[in-house]
Image (cartoon, rainbow over all chains, first blue to last red; front, top):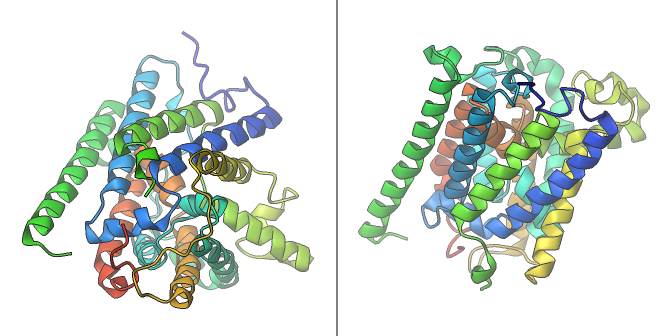
Length: 200
Length: 171
Protein backbone atom coordinates (compact mmCIF):
# COMPACT_ATOMS: atom_id res chain seq x y z
CA UNK A 1 0.00 0.00 0.00
CA UNK A 2 1.34 3.41 -0.87
CA UNK A 3 1.66 6.05 1.80
CA UNK A 4 0.01 9.18 0.43
CA UNK A 5 -0.43 11.30 3.56
CA UNK A 6 0.54 14.00 4.44
CA UNK A 7 -0.21 15.16 0.90
CA UNK A 8 2.16 18.15 1.00
CA UNK A 9 5.25 16.47 2.43
CA UNK A 10 4.73 13.51 0.07
CA UNK A 11 4.73 15.84 -2.92
CA UNK A 12 1.11 15.24 -3.98
CA UNK A 13 0.31 18.95 -3.70
CA UNK A 14 2.65 21.87 -4.32
CA UNK A 15 3.41 24.76 -1.99
CA UNK A 16 0.86 27.15 -3.53
CA UNK A 17 -1.98 24.65 -3.31
CA UNK A 18 -0.93 23.78 0.25
CA UNK A 19 -1.16 27.47 1.20
CA UNK A 20 -4.59 27.79 -0.43
CA UNK A 21 -5.85 24.69 1.34
CA UNK A 22 -4.39 26.17 4.55
CA UNK A 23 -6.78 29.08 4.20
CA UNK A 24 -9.71 26.66 3.91
CA UNK A 25 -8.50 24.59 6.87
CA UNK A 26 -8.18 27.80 8.90
CA UNK A 27 -11.76 28.78 8.01
CA UNK A 28 -12.95 25.39 9.32
CA UNK A 29 -10.90 25.85 12.52
CA UNK A 30 -12.29 29.35 13.05
CA UNK A 31 -15.87 28.24 12.49
CA UNK A 32 -15.53 25.36 14.95
CA UNK A 33 -13.74 27.48 17.57
CA UNK A 34 -16.50 30.11 17.42
CA UNK A 35 -19.27 27.47 17.57
CA UNK A 36 -17.53 25.81 20.52
CA UNK A 37 -17.65 29.10 22.44
CA UNK A 38 -13.98 30.09 22.12
CA UNK A 39 -14.87 33.51 20.70
CA UNK A 40 -15.25 35.09 24.13
CA UNK A 41 -13.04 35.22 27.22
CA UNK A 42 -16.24 34.59 29.20
CA UNK A 43 -15.94 30.92 28.26
CA UNK A 44 -12.21 30.62 28.87
CA UNK A 45 -11.44 32.41 32.16
CA UNK A 46 -14.15 30.63 34.28
CA UNK A 47 -12.26 27.38 33.70
CA UNK A 48 -9.65 28.54 36.18
CA UNK A 49 -12.32 28.90 38.88
CA UNK A 50 -13.94 25.54 38.03
CA UNK A 51 -17.17 27.28 37.03
CA UNK A 52 -17.02 25.89 33.49
CA UNK A 53 -15.22 22.93 31.95
CA UNK A 54 -15.89 23.83 28.30
CA UNK A 55 -12.21 24.27 27.48
CA UNK A 56 -10.86 20.98 28.91
CA UNK A 57 -13.84 19.06 27.49
CA UNK A 58 -13.30 20.38 23.96
CA UNK A 59 -9.51 19.98 24.16
CA UNK A 60 -9.63 16.41 25.44
CA UNK A 61 -12.27 15.34 22.90
CA UNK A 62 -10.29 16.96 20.07
CA UNK A 63 -7.00 15.38 21.17
CA UNK A 64 -8.53 11.89 21.44
CA UNK A 65 -10.35 12.22 18.09
CA UNK A 66 -7.30 13.46 16.18
CA UNK A 67 -4.94 11.02 17.92
CA UNK A 68 -7.23 8.09 17.10
CA UNK A 69 -7.43 9.02 13.42
CA UNK A 70 -3.67 9.57 13.17
CA UNK A 71 -2.99 6.31 15.01
CA UNK A 72 -5.33 4.20 12.85
CA UNK A 73 -4.18 5.91 9.64
CA UNK A 74 -0.55 5.22 10.51
CA UNK A 75 -1.19 1.59 11.48
CA UNK A 76 -3.01 1.00 8.18
CA UNK A 77 -0.10 2.56 6.32
CA UNK A 78 -1.95 5.52 4.80
CA UNK A 79 -0.10 8.12 6.85
CA UNK A 80 3.65 8.51 7.17
CA UNK A 81 3.76 9.51 10.84
CA UNK A 82 7.45 10.44 10.55
CA UNK A 83 6.53 13.27 8.15
CA UNK A 84 4.08 14.93 10.53
CA UNK A 85 5.57 18.01 12.14
CA UNK A 86 6.24 17.50 15.84
CA UNK A 87 7.96 20.35 17.65
CA UNK A 88 11.28 19.67 19.35
CA UNK A 89 10.86 19.27 23.11
CA UNK A 90 12.92 21.71 25.18
CA UNK A 91 12.32 20.62 28.76
CA UNK A 92 13.15 23.76 30.79
CA UNK A 93 11.80 26.40 28.40
CA UNK A 94 8.55 24.41 28.07
CA UNK A 95 8.18 24.11 31.84
CA UNK A 96 9.00 27.75 32.70
CA UNK A 97 7.48 29.15 29.49
CA UNK A 98 4.34 27.09 30.11
CA UNK A 99 3.94 28.60 33.57
CA UNK A 100 4.45 32.13 32.23
CA UNK A 101 1.87 31.33 29.53
CA UNK A 102 -0.62 30.19 32.19
CA UNK A 103 -0.23 33.45 34.09
CA UNK A 104 -0.85 35.44 30.92
CA UNK A 105 -3.82 33.26 30.00
CA UNK A 106 -5.72 33.75 33.30
CA UNK A 107 -4.76 37.44 33.32
CA UNK A 108 -6.08 38.07 29.81
CA UNK A 109 -8.70 35.36 29.35
CA UNK A 110 -7.28 34.63 25.91
CA UNK A 111 -4.74 32.58 24.05
CA UNK A 112 -3.49 33.47 20.56
CA UNK A 113 -5.90 31.20 18.63
CA UNK A 114 -9.06 32.10 20.50
CA UNK A 115 -8.16 35.80 20.33
CA UNK A 116 -8.26 35.68 16.51
CA UNK A 117 -11.88 34.56 16.77
CA UNK A 118 -12.49 37.17 19.48
CA UNK A 119 -11.21 39.94 17.20
CA UNK A 120 -13.44 38.67 14.38
CA UNK A 121 -16.45 39.07 16.68
CA UNK A 122 -15.34 42.53 17.92
CA UNK A 123 -14.33 41.61 21.47
CA UNK A 124 -12.39 44.72 22.56
CA UNK A 125 -10.42 42.73 25.14
CA UNK A 126 -9.25 40.37 22.36
CA UNK A 127 -8.01 43.35 20.33
CA UNK A 128 -6.00 44.64 23.32
CA UNK A 129 -4.67 41.13 23.92
CA UNK A 130 -3.52 40.90 20.30
CA UNK A 131 -1.79 44.30 20.53
CA UNK A 132 -0.07 42.95 23.64
CA UNK A 133 1.01 39.90 21.64
CA UNK A 134 2.74 42.11 19.06
CA UNK A 135 4.55 44.06 21.79
CA UNK A 136 5.48 40.85 23.61
CA UNK A 137 6.89 39.30 20.43
CA UNK A 138 8.99 42.39 19.80
CA UNK A 139 10.18 42.32 23.40
CA UNK A 140 11.23 38.67 23.00
CA UNK A 141 13.02 39.35 19.71
CA UNK A 142 15.02 42.04 21.52
CA UNK A 143 15.99 40.00 24.57
CA UNK A 144 16.52 36.69 22.73
CA UNK A 145 20.27 37.03 22.40
CA UNK A 146 20.56 37.31 26.19
CA UNK A 147 18.46 34.23 26.96
CA UNK A 148 19.53 32.10 24.01
CA UNK A 149 21.13 29.44 26.22
CA UNK A 150 18.07 29.01 28.41
CA UNK A 151 15.69 29.10 25.44
CA UNK A 152 17.47 26.10 23.92
CA UNK A 153 18.19 24.16 27.12
CA UNK A 154 16.94 20.64 27.83
CA UNK A 155 16.76 19.75 24.12
CA UNK A 156 15.23 16.26 23.89
CA UNK A 157 14.71 16.35 20.11
CA UNK A 158 11.48 15.06 18.58
CA UNK A 159 10.46 13.42 21.83
CA UNK A 160 7.35 11.28 21.55
CA UNK A 161 5.80 9.21 24.34
CA UNK A 162 7.15 5.89 23.01
CA UNK A 163 10.68 7.26 23.32
CA UNK A 164 10.01 8.12 26.99
CA UNK A 165 8.48 4.81 28.07
CA UNK A 166 9.65 2.39 25.38
CA UNK A 167 7.47 0.62 22.81
CA UNK A 168 5.96 2.04 19.65
CA UNK A 169 3.09 4.24 18.45
CA UNK A 170 0.58 1.89 20.11
CA UNK A 171 1.88 2.69 23.59
CA UNK A 172 1.97 6.42 22.67
CA UNK A 173 -1.68 6.25 21.66
CA UNK A 174 -2.82 4.33 24.74
CA UNK A 175 -1.03 6.71 27.11
CA UNK A 176 -2.39 9.74 25.25
CA UNK A 177 -5.98 8.50 25.60
CA UNK A 178 -5.48 7.47 29.24
CA UNK A 179 -3.78 10.74 30.21
CA UNK A 180 -6.40 12.88 28.43
CA UNK A 181 -9.33 11.05 29.99
CA UNK A 182 -7.62 10.90 33.39
CA UNK A 183 -7.01 14.63 33.36
CA UNK A 184 -10.61 15.36 32.35
CA UNK A 185 -12.03 13.07 35.05
CA UNK A 186 -9.73 14.74 37.58
CA UNK A 187 -10.96 18.27 36.81
CA UNK A 188 -14.58 17.03 36.76
CA UNK A 189 -14.02 15.54 40.24
CA UNK A 190 -12.42 18.75 41.53
CA UNK A 191 -15.37 20.75 40.17
CA UNK A 192 -17.81 18.42 41.98
CA UNK A 193 -15.97 18.87 45.28
CA UNK A 194 -15.93 22.66 44.87
CA UNK A 195 -19.60 22.80 43.83
CA UNK A 196 -20.60 20.71 46.86
CA UNK A 197 -18.74 23.04 49.20
CA UNK A 198 -20.91 25.82 47.82
CA UNK A 199 -18.03 28.14 47.05
CA UNK A 200 -18.31 30.44 44.03
CA UNK B 1 -27.72 34.47 26.31
CA UNK B 2 -27.11 32.77 23.00
CA UNK B 3 -25.95 29.52 24.55
CA UNK B 4 -28.37 27.40 22.53
CA UNK B 5 -26.51 28.34 19.39
CA UNK B 6 -23.23 26.93 20.72
CA UNK B 7 -22.33 23.34 20.04
CA UNK B 8 -21.90 20.96 22.96
CA UNK B 9 -18.24 20.59 24.00
CA UNK B 10 -18.19 16.98 22.76
CA UNK B 11 -19.57 17.94 19.33
CA UNK B 12 -17.12 20.84 19.03
CA UNK B 13 -14.28 18.62 20.24
CA UNK B 14 -14.95 15.81 17.78
CA UNK B 15 -15.25 18.23 14.85
CA UNK B 16 -12.10 20.08 15.95
CA UNK B 17 -10.28 16.74 16.18
CA UNK B 18 -11.39 15.80 12.66
CA UNK B 19 -10.30 19.22 11.35
CA UNK B 20 -6.92 18.80 13.06
CA UNK B 21 -6.57 15.39 11.42
CA UNK B 22 -7.38 16.82 7.99
CA UNK B 23 -4.78 19.53 8.56
CA UNK B 24 -2.16 16.93 9.51
CA UNK B 25 -2.82 14.68 6.50
CA UNK B 26 -2.91 17.58 4.05
CA UNK B 27 -0.21 19.96 5.24
CA UNK B 28 1.71 17.75 7.68
CA UNK B 29 1.01 20.20 10.49
CA UNK B 30 -1.94 21.08 12.70
CA UNK B 31 -3.53 24.28 13.93
CA UNK B 32 -1.20 27.18 14.71
CA UNK B 33 -1.72 30.69 16.01
CA UNK B 34 1.17 32.28 17.92
CA UNK B 35 3.56 31.84 14.99
CA UNK B 36 1.39 34.15 12.90
CA UNK B 37 1.66 36.91 15.52
CA UNK B 38 5.43 36.40 15.75
CA UNK B 39 5.78 36.64 11.97
CA UNK B 40 3.52 39.70 11.78
CA UNK B 41 5.63 41.45 14.39
CA UNK B 42 8.83 40.55 12.52
CA UNK B 43 7.41 41.85 9.22
CA UNK B 44 6.22 45.12 10.83
CA UNK B 45 9.60 45.66 12.52
CA UNK B 46 11.37 44.90 9.24
CA UNK B 47 9.28 47.38 7.26
CA UNK B 48 10.18 50.10 9.81
CA UNK B 49 13.85 49.13 9.98
CA UNK B 50 15.37 46.73 7.37
CA UNK B 51 18.28 46.05 9.74
CA UNK B 52 15.79 43.98 11.72
CA UNK B 53 16.52 41.14 9.26
CA UNK B 54 19.70 40.60 11.32
CA UNK B 55 17.76 40.10 14.56
CA UNK B 56 18.95 36.99 16.42
CA UNK B 57 15.45 35.50 16.63
CA UNK B 58 13.28 37.11 13.96
CA UNK B 59 15.96 36.85 11.27
CA UNK B 60 14.85 33.29 10.49
CA UNK B 61 11.37 34.58 9.56
CA UNK B 62 12.76 37.21 7.20
CA UNK B 63 15.51 35.41 5.33
CA UNK B 64 13.13 33.84 2.77
CA UNK B 65 11.43 37.11 1.89
CA UNK B 66 8.09 38.23 3.27
CA UNK B 67 7.57 36.67 6.71
CA UNK B 68 3.81 36.56 6.08
CA UNK B 69 4.03 34.15 3.13
CA UNK B 70 3.69 31.20 5.43
CA UNK B 71 1.18 28.40 6.01
CA UNK B 72 0.39 29.31 9.62
CA UNK B 73 -0.14 33.00 8.79
CA UNK B 74 -2.57 32.12 5.99
CA UNK B 75 -4.33 29.54 8.18
CA UNK B 76 -4.78 32.21 10.90
CA UNK B 77 -6.38 34.52 8.31
CA UNK B 78 -8.72 31.57 7.71
CA UNK B 79 -9.46 31.28 11.45
CA UNK B 80 -10.46 34.95 11.41
CA UNK B 81 -12.78 34.46 8.40
CA UNK B 82 -14.29 31.23 9.78
CA UNK B 83 -14.88 32.76 13.22
CA UNK B 84 -16.49 35.78 11.59
CA UNK B 85 -18.81 33.66 9.40
CA UNK B 86 -19.92 31.52 12.35
CA UNK B 87 -20.57 34.52 14.59
CA UNK B 88 -22.36 36.35 11.76
CA UNK B 89 -24.77 33.44 11.25
CA UNK B 90 -25.33 33.17 15.02
CA UNK B 91 -25.67 36.97 15.35
CA UNK B 92 -22.88 37.14 17.92
CA UNK B 93 -20.85 40.00 16.46
CA UNK B 94 -21.00 42.89 18.87
CA UNK B 95 -18.40 45.14 20.52
CA UNK B 96 -17.89 44.01 24.08
CA UNK B 97 -15.41 44.13 26.96
CA UNK B 98 -15.87 40.88 28.87
CA UNK B 99 -15.31 41.50 32.59
CA UNK B 100 -16.66 40.85 36.09
CA UNK B 101 -19.62 42.80 37.44
CA UNK B 102 -18.51 46.25 38.56
CA UNK B 103 -14.97 45.78 37.23
CA UNK B 104 -13.61 48.76 35.29
CA UNK B 105 -13.16 48.43 31.51
CA UNK B 106 -9.86 50.27 31.68
CA UNK B 107 -8.35 47.84 34.14
CA UNK B 108 -9.72 44.89 32.19
CA UNK B 109 -8.20 46.14 28.92
CA UNK B 110 -4.90 46.83 30.67
CA UNK B 111 -4.72 43.23 31.90
CA UNK B 112 -5.82 41.91 28.49
CA UNK B 113 -2.90 43.85 26.95
CA UNK B 114 -0.36 42.87 29.62
CA UNK B 115 -1.50 39.24 29.42
CA UNK B 116 -0.88 39.41 25.67
CA UNK B 117 2.68 40.66 26.22
CA UNK B 118 3.34 37.82 28.67
CA UNK B 119 1.70 35.14 26.51
CA UNK B 120 3.65 36.22 23.42
CA UNK B 121 7.04 35.95 25.09
CA UNK B 122 6.04 32.61 26.64
CA UNK B 123 5.04 31.14 23.25
CA UNK B 124 8.52 31.79 21.86
CA UNK B 125 10.03 29.79 24.74
CA UNK B 126 7.47 27.01 24.26
CA UNK B 127 7.55 27.01 20.42
CA UNK B 128 3.80 27.38 20.21
CA UNK B 129 0.64 27.99 22.19
CA UNK B 130 -2.49 26.11 23.16
CA UNK B 131 -3.01 25.29 19.46
CA UNK B 132 0.37 24.63 17.91
CA UNK B 133 1.97 23.16 21.00
CA UNK B 134 -0.74 21.67 23.26
CA UNK B 135 -3.41 20.41 20.82
CA UNK B 136 -1.15 19.49 17.90
CA UNK B 137 1.58 18.04 20.09
CA UNK B 138 -0.76 15.95 22.23
CA UNK B 139 -2.56 14.61 19.14
CA UNK B 140 0.79 13.54 17.65
CA UNK B 141 2.07 11.99 20.91
CA UNK B 142 4.72 14.59 21.79
CA UNK B 143 5.87 14.62 25.42
CA UNK B 144 6.59 18.36 25.20
CA UNK B 145 2.90 19.09 24.63
CA UNK B 146 2.08 17.56 28.00
CA UNK B 147 4.86 19.43 29.79
CA UNK B 148 3.51 22.66 28.30
CA UNK B 149 -0.15 21.87 29.01
CA UNK B 150 0.38 20.85 32.63
CA UNK B 151 2.62 23.86 33.28
CA UNK B 152 0.24 26.32 31.58
CA UNK B 153 -3.02 25.13 33.09
CA UNK B 154 -1.33 24.45 36.45
CA UNK B 155 -0.08 28.04 36.53
CA UNK B 156 -3.49 29.29 35.38
CA UNK B 157 -5.18 27.64 38.35
CA UNK B 158 -2.38 28.76 40.68
CA UNK B 159 -2.51 32.44 39.68
CA UNK B 160 -6.32 32.56 39.37
CA UNK B 161 -6.73 34.09 42.83
CA UNK B 162 -5.02 37.28 41.59
CA UNK B 163 -7.78 37.92 39.02
CA UNK B 164 -10.85 36.87 40.98
CA UNK B 165 -12.50 40.29 40.77
CA UNK B 166 -11.88 40.62 37.06
CA UNK B 167 -13.76 37.38 36.37
CA UNK B 168 -16.37 37.61 39.14
CA UNK B 169 -19.69 36.23 37.89
CA UNK B 170 -18.36 35.79 34.34
CA UNK B 171 -19.55 32.57 32.74
